[in-house]
Amino acid sequence: MSKIKRSVRSVAATFCVSALLFLICAAFDSEISAASAASAGSSPDDRHPPREREPFVQGELGERIRAYLNAVEERGFSGSIIAARDGRVVAALGAGCADLERTTPNTPATLFEIASVTKPLTATAVIRLAQDGHIELDDPIRVHLPGVPRDCFDITIEHLLRHTSGIPGSNSQGGGSDFGAVLPLFLRGGPQHEPGTHFEYWNQGYAILTEVIHRASGTSYTDYSRKMVFEPAGMTLTRFTGDDPPDGAIVAVGRCSLGPPRSALDHPYGSYGFQYRGMGGIVTNVWDLWRFDRALREHTIINADLTKRMFTSGPGNDGLGWRIANKPGRTVYSHTGRVRGFNADMRRYADEDAFIAVLANGDRVPSFEIAGSIETILFGDDPMNHSPLGRLSREQSDALVGAYRDGRGNVLTISDDTILIRGVMRWAGNFPDTNAVLGLNDAGEITLDDRSGVEIPITITARDAKSNAATQLSILGQSYERVSD
Image (cartoon, rainbow, N blue to C red; front, side, top):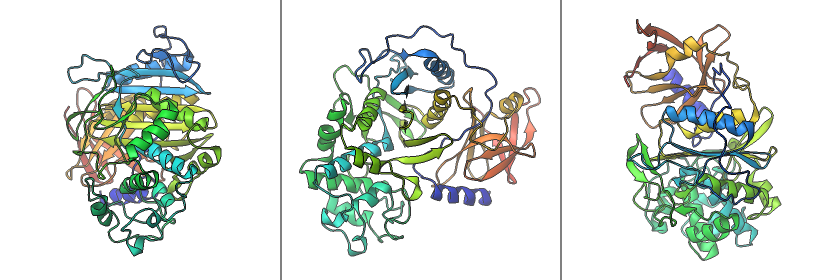
């Protein structure tokens, strides 16, 4: 198993550790029915639809997305989604419940914490600061911040935005509201690579950026974001953890395996200090994220030249606050996030004027999986277009679905969302999850493909005599036993 772990760690260093990469998988053997009930409401012609709590569906695409969401709701997905194509929303829907008692359904207006999806909004605030002449993105951070050690003098604001400062991602200790106390911890040891040459995802760089905003603007990061990002975009319900809820708003309570339940407005780490500030902590809904997308497209917050710079790829295929992926036929600008109780996925498609946001208050079905499947529906993709693997048969996929654990505590979860078959490996220890496709390689072997060139054969070594379901798998010689539900 050490071989597979080394492969995954190498891939994760090349691709963004932050993003839980969704990967195209197999088995869509029947069409999604479009025979669901008539949609509520009419097509919104602007950014302010009249009844945002109501489910909204438009056309065949919307109906297919609704049918898909109904299917994954039965699997345990709880959250809200929005999907748009050609500048128009085709679906805005809720699934599951916002409360622990399961009496309050999620709606498209429900508020969720979005974790690291906060970063594109923080980046937008920094870029607006540059547009207004308070900073230059090429400024070394020492120009704006006292106490930067000499070995970090070459780190610029843009390096922090792109995760190319050279500071290792493991420099994550420190928190609270005293910036002078946390800065030496964040920058301890200095860059391990020449700034601007190497991508390594580093949350604390965004905490440092909030102090740049504070010192350059003369106001707090949260107040500046409200005034210069949320308000111009029309994000009237968007808040930060620790804020009071908007009048009459539904605020989701998150449930997950990372700890006890929490409200979206509760601090996941005790306070909104530098342990989380700027890197996470925004609380919003799918409609407000759609408004944010519209504001970026219409240059309501930042001008066209700076928008272009934001979405220009650098080392690691990251823009300023965004992951950039060039897929067959389109470019995707995205970010994902995960924190106790909540996970989120936001995707923009500038050429197609399309947008997807998935916000979840549970982790039984991760948001990146939902977003990937909605993307497949939205663009009419063949789910296997992005994978060299062939499709599993229905018998094979039915036999594999479930969770499997090896002797070291690594857990492989295989799921079927009615469109795609996905595998998620959660490693014991401090390693990022590996998200992969399941399909058949050229030799007809069941294989995991993480779209990085690493393909891992899977062998079913034992089955249940009655159901024929796999009870034991072999992966590179390591045995995985099925975990009971």
